[in-house]
Image (cartoon, rainbow, N blue to C red):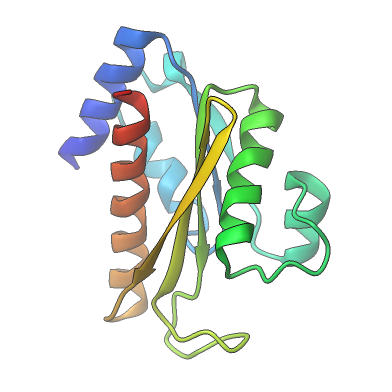
Length: 151
């Protein structure tokens, strides 16, 4: 994944640190980032929070928040940025499939971010097998990191 190498270059050039929170990707995002060059210098770490109570207690997800929502994605990104004392953070939450969950179709994914005290999110409507949905989710999160580290 060439974009992760660009993220690494930009983080190293600017001195930014990066953190991730992930749910449906269950470690795939952190693993992808950890493979980039000099990750130990700029990758603060990540939290895999699969269950909602973990998202609430570790990352500060407000109780009652739909875990597959724009609010959740932003809260998770903000929470991991604070927890890891990172400059920028991204989060990935959603339904990988193969079936729907909690009233959300498989492939409904939110990528959240937090940097400079601001948060945002992007809805992805993906299709395919669960593995394809997870890979596309990671690619979207890395693209968000690329944007955040280039500001």
